[in-house]
Image (cartoon, rainbow, N blue to C red; front, top):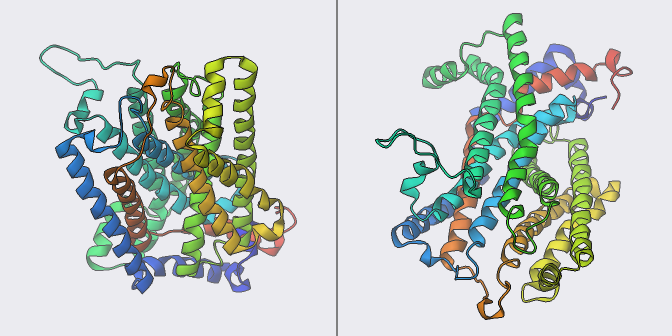
Length: 458
């Protein structure tokens, strides 16, 4: 029996009554009055967002000299946060596109929120390189644009430009994929609404009429978008890894970075999905849709990617030793024994050790334990990005230029503000749009009926 339907109460798989209950359960979240916890969460995230806005304006007005960067460490907290947020956004496309192509039906209850999370995470990621440009009001310079001197071409050898094309493409495809998936559910909400809400939903649902012909075209478009989005999961974080791998700095110049970054992005993205979904299922009472089976499946993905990331850590150490390059060896010894050794130890513990508890099915079914592990993984993955970026450059070839990096309150506040943007956008999404794909869950219900039980196995 399928993942979603198998854990639902018996009336939910009983013909039309089951379909009606799915619609009612999902729509009540967007149509009803929010719980006090929603208002509390929105107030907290909005305060963080406002703090971030004030500090972003301050650093743009004053200059990025308010950061803790120095002549040795020119990249640190800002690029760490950029790579962190891009990684968070990977799980949404993976869950929606790749698992859809592989016909993994357990994705149906979590794909909508994961897709929204992707869009919001990419928005947060874009803040940091934009500010790091120094003059963000000239951001349009990274695009070829008409000018009196003819076509003004950008520097295609710049990693900053690669990120611009990668992130803008990823954001565009992810947003289109998310919106197309929303159309049937927006039409469902349209038919239940009235007044201004009905007018807005009518425009957003693009004239959806639910006919066989409409569904046929919709499913073809959705399949094509899934196929188009799938390579982006690999390509986007691969390009982000090229920011470092194409340099000649010890600790960065390595061919393992592309697959290493991609697996790490999936690892951190699934951890963030788990964190949000575990809170959502409790707050808005979606235990019947986000079931222990879904949590178990995501924990297995986290375990797999944790082992890949742990293998990457070991491979880096082995490569530096086997290379017999004293600069490469020093870079990794500095990570392990240098002044940032606490960050490295935390990274290894959170990313390679903690997720091993998921070998136990009892651990995968323990909601508090899964929640704690997902939080630790997110902490560990942030530490990983900081270790890769900062410890590789704070001690370079000349001891006379060695320097320590310490973030200022401006950088910490900006990072806090990015979390405020993320959670504010996610809470607004949960309030006004269906968190769960109604049409896809109804499609899964067919496989829960008794005459399908033997054919479609778990």
